[in-house]
Each structure stands twice: as C-alpha cells, then as structure tokens.
Amino acid sequence: MARRLQNVQRVDHHYFHGWRVCITRQGQRYERYFRDSRDRGVALSSALRWRDHMLAILPPRRLFKRRYTKNTTGVVGVYRSRERTRRGTTFRRYGATWIDETGRRHKRSFSVAKYGAARARDLAVKARTKALEQLLRPAHEDPRRLGRGKRQRR
Figure 1 (spheres, rainbow, N blue to C red):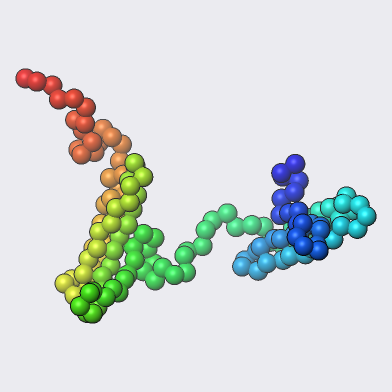
Figure 2 (figure 1 turned 30 degrees about the horizontal axis):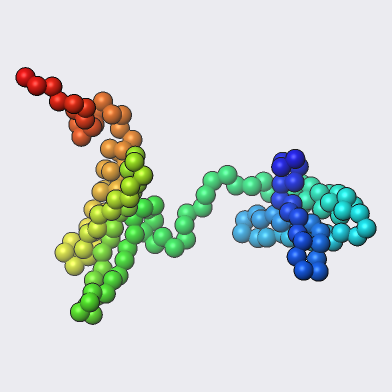
C-alpha cells in the first residue's frame, strides 16, 4: 500500500479534505490537490491518475545528491569560518570535521593568519582525508587499534 501511495498524501485540514500529490524534479515542485466530493475513492483515483501521468512525462529521479550549495570549499567536511573573539578581533580559519566509528564528532582547524588561505585549506583537506583513511582501514592494519585487548604479562 505504501508503494501505491508514493507522492500522494491525505490532507484533512480546516475546510479542505482530500488528497495532495507532490513530485519534485530538478528543484521544481509539481503539486496538485484533489478534493473529496461524496466519495473519497473518486478523489484518490484522480490523484493517482495525475501522479502516474506526471511521472510518465517528467524525467526520472536522480539517485545521487547534489553538492551542498553553501559549501564554498568544494570538499565535503571542510569548511571556512570567520569568527570574532571576545576582544572583538576577527580571525579566519579552515576546518575539517568527521565522525569516527563510535559516532563521536572530531574536528581540526587551521588558521589562515598562520598558514595562509591556500595552505590552511590544503591542511584541512589532508586532515580529513587522513582521518577517513584511518577510519576505513581494517582493524588489523591500523596500529592504533592493535593491542586494545588485555595486555599479557611477561
């Protein structure tokens, strides 16, 4: 039943009772409401017909995610920030964030004043890449993960 009603929702709000069909493609929303008359089934079948018609003429859904538009660095997990200290001076930095296997968030930042903008960005990208490589490395290859059990006495 859930597959049959994909993109179709029931709406019961104030003076409107019916079905809503909403399809989004390439950032454009296609939406239409179908009001119940005496029979709910008529409105539902009209909504399903319109949905099927729109799905036939619209391009298929994209299954990949577009790049986040607010990310100006071009690298996922790397950000540029400008912050103000308590004294009122501003400083800029590039930072890298990632989540480890336990779900904890980690971050490292690199000052633009200390390293320069290009080098600070490169250091942030390298820090994130290195952290993700270590995260994806099998446990037997990672030297930090070796010997995590009980130590044997000699």
